Length: 326
Image 1: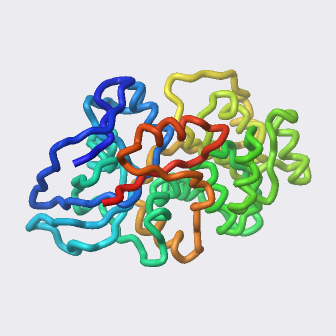
Image 2 (image 1 turned 135 degrees about the horizontal axis):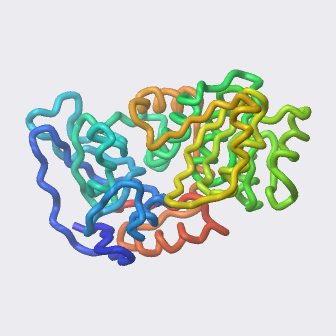
């Protein structure tokens, strides 16, 4: 069967691999849609946040169809439409990183990692559940938002756009801070009330100008850029909350840490989206969350190398997906 394989650090290739054999508590899943994530490039560069071994098949943002179930599996059967979690085994493993993932015609998962995909969500939308769950989890862990709250989202990548969609559906007034024009425009489509270009001046000043001088009740840092992460302190209002979700490995920047005390700030950091998938899926379905506007192009699995190249082109793409045609 075909798969996208990260053969070694810096080398990705599409080739034939042996179909996986499932255990008693596992399921064989046929790929329908899988997203390319920035963290896939960290994996390929051997710079991921937990140890990994090559070769490995990437792919952690996926939707698929159950092909076969092990004898101990209950609650699923062939033909079921499912999505699956990334942070597994109590957080010790990440599917698509330390465990081979979904960028293959077929792959195996443990049944307790899987969740049914509601009929109202397409395969394409199903493959956005994982990035949305990360934003939803970060907002929830930071205390959530109330209608009328001012929420600033730093970074207009897939996680940031997901945070915009989530917070706006929760009733917040959302400001997206993002340097790229097409990503600011996308944020407005997904629910941002205002946007800020960090190249136009200090972001704290711009956000205060939009919030009557107060700043944001909640700041979601989704860029992972060290300077942007440092700017979050100035963007926050007094007694504001900061949710750090953008991934950064080893970066540094000067930050006004005294604001943590002087503004009585609350900080949270999240990795992945453990223990929130059923709630996430219910929210996406009930609130009509549709992140398909951020998907700019889709490639067949046989051209997954082109999908990687397109995803690396941040000037033109926000989210690229891969599909398996058969």
